[in-house]
Length: 470
Ligand SMILES: *Cc1c(COP(=O)(O)O)cnc(C)c1O
Image (cartoon, rainbow, N blue to C red; front, top):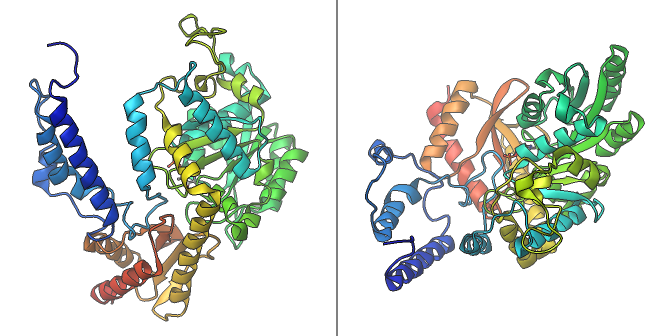
């Protein structure tokens, strides 16, 4: 027997139809079961088998998927999921993943349609945030990598010889708010700049970077012989959704001859809601930008995106010329530059198809309405919290993230309450620390979360609070 295709296409096709029906039955009833449930030990143990020497029928494996995998999934397609910052996916996204897998394109480069689809998606992303049409970019796993690529590009714009010589001796430093996502300091670490080279700037009472403190710190660093090269603004902070003063940061970056990067992982999508777009003014002045289609864009995981205003600077930071990757003027090896010229990945899947189908199917007006609805649901939660003496609202609600706690509960009790809430299957917010206090954090990134979901969560919290109360 040679090759791996089935001998019996009829039964493979029947299995495929059955799967499709199950997938859409469940999509139609999403929200009817628990958000999440813990995986029993016996089922965990089913994934400790030896490497299979002999194969088993796909029908049997599908049965195992239904019994052992599907019931214990992450839960972020469920309306009750409000933890961290996670998108919920869409039926069109499910189909796009299937279609992309059927082509199995390698999108590192070369001359095929998937590359054009990705270029289309990058131009759309640039238009969404007000970057020029000639901006470059590529799809990546997520904003962690998009921020990394941006920081690497910015450092090499200072001095391209960094690529050969490393950063040794150069005292490059960058700036972000103390509330910036942890992947920013990790990017400094991975880029060889060292995480100490990222200066964390204090925030004001609205949790936005304090621009006066920033300007002062840059002055001090210059005096001490450092070379400030990048200012990183956050559009939608991960703990409470704050937006840094982007216009002011862009002005300072211009004056100080620094690269201006914006981490817009989820917040960039607020640009699609006419009511919220104004909060992100200044994002259009970014030299580079990170955003995640898999968060507020609702594209299935994973679908991060990096945009760089200056295409030449972007290519200068990553492109290589290698004999086994020669670009031709025609034939399959044509169509340069390739996505592999704009980041560290060579082999890459066809992420662009699911992004293209999502944007083209819903349109940005509808996606903007969805973003506005999420913010409205967050505001509703904040109002219920503020109008109830048992609760405390712990941070201003700028967009879609609500941090709150219960007056009578200490940190340990809140921690236990949230774990109980997860195990109840009703709702899954996460936690964070605000002013040193552990708080419940509900991020409404999920297009399925409604006011009714919020009511159900608060009812369950009230029940659990009696159990954990003093
Ligand atoms: C989620 C997030 C990140 C990290 O993005 P991933 O897609 O998880 O890698 C970075 N910054 C902010 C503000 C985020 O919300």
